Every structure is written in C-alpha cells, then in structure tokens.
Image 1 (cartoon, rainbow, N blue to C red):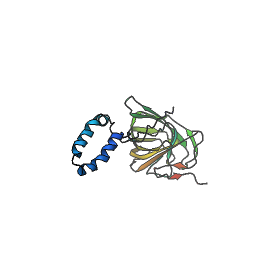
Image 2 (image 1 turned 90 degrees about the vertical axis):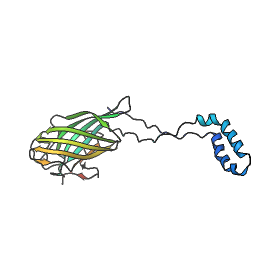
Image 3 (image 1 turned 90 degrees about the horizontal axis):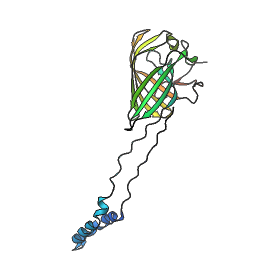
Image 4 (image 1 turned 120 degrees about the vertical axis):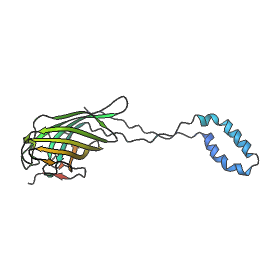
Length: 226
C-alpha cells in the first residue's frame, strides 16, 4: 500500500562567463574615456548569452512525508487524558496528475478494559474509513461528522460512544503525525471534546503494539501501572 515520493532538488543555474565579465567591467567604466562605447559593444556581443539565461529556480518546498502504512493512533480526551481511545490507522497516500496529495485512512478501534491502556487491544467493531482527504503543506483535516464507537473500545466508562468529531493533523515525519480533536461527545455523557489531542506512531507490525502509548504532539506517553 505504501507509495514512494521522490525529492527533486533544484540547483541554481551556471553563470555564463560573459556575464561574469560584465560584473568585472562595470567598475572600469568611470576610469576610461571610451569605456561607455566599449561597454555598449560588450552588451551587444553578449546579448544572446543573457537572453538565454534560465530564470532563478523557485523556492523548493519540502516533499510531503509518506505516511502510508499502519499506525497506532491514540485519542486523549479532556475527559480522561491518561485513558486514550486507541485505533490501528491504515493509511494510503495518492498523488493526482496535478501533483495534489490525498489521504485515505481507516481507523480500526481496539478493545480496552475500563481503566486500562494496554489490555486487551484487539480489533473490535467496524473501522471508520475516510477518503480523498487533501494534504497541504504537511497538514490535513478530517471532518468525520457523527462517529459511533463500541463501548468495548471505551476505557473511560465502557459505554458506547457517539460524538461529532474533527481531527486537525500535522505530519511530523513519515513515522509520526499528530494534532488536536474538536467536537462534542453526545453519549454516554455530554461534553465538549475541544482541547483533546491525538498522536499516531508507525507500526512495523500491527500485531506488536508498544506499551508506551503516545497521546500528543509533544510526545507524552502513558501505559498501565504495574
């Protein structure tokens, strides 16, 4: 599923020797009585070189980091920051003929015992899938609308979750993206989600989940106490 992106580095044009000579001749004009005539002759003789000089290269933007693949995505809510909801996020990046980059993502909820971070974390319920999400300057926004997640994936209350959800994300590199959550929780209780955070860390093997769960862009982690 992973797609590779190439980085094309642009270098400045080589300066023709005639133009270099131009820069050296200018200071001599004031000291010679016929310098102006010679300078004009020089301009005529080097016109072709100057006309065909390529323009300076545009500013080179960093390439979009390719976040295709599997990630452990944790949502840390303002209700219980140390009991994040967790998902396996499976991403695919594509680029159209205009060079625009789009993300398709499926978030598979993971089961969690109430009050726990690391157990049992088995896939549960239907995945939440989104397509054609534009990525611009390493940022993307998922307006998920009304989201329903089974209570077996809710480590806070164990009740079924219904909420309006918006994820505002920044890609840090190919192995990490993160951001903020906006929206409102409607069930099992009423609460704003504004101020909640999420983080996603690349997985080499979705069957091997890290015990330290990253929950924010600052890299804060949480795990079950032994």
